[in-house]
Length: 164
Image 1 (cartoon, helix red, strand yellow):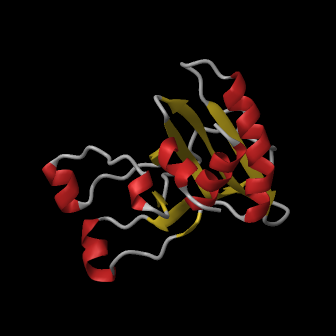
Image 2 (spheres, rainbow, N blue to C red):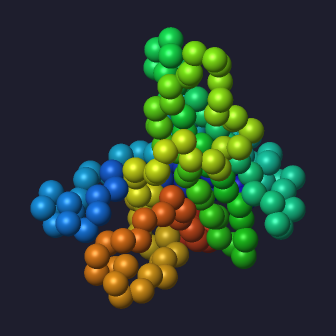
């Protein structure tokens, strides 16, 4: 995977507040926003590329971003990714999830970035739908908007054709 593809992949990822069927019918869809800001992308790109270059087929590369909100709270974004058959699989376990540090010290272990601190409250999207491989859902999941996942699969050949 090239540096340009990784920058495009991270720059194009969007998150949108998850809304279940009935809420979606009344309030509509929330507006998508970038999953990562420019500084996070600059920090992640070289590290993710190095990890993917070293990863073997059954392995995935994880990431963990954390920043303080105040003396007792942190904001965590974490997940993982892997490449298989020309497709980049991106998993978001936490997106700007607020984590309150208990008085006894850190309980959440950052060595496990795929562990969700709370139920994921965002849908993972991409700015151009044709880059995303469609998810397989059954009729009832699609009808009631039950399908909710923090994983998206991007076609790398379509990423490389995009202009920067």
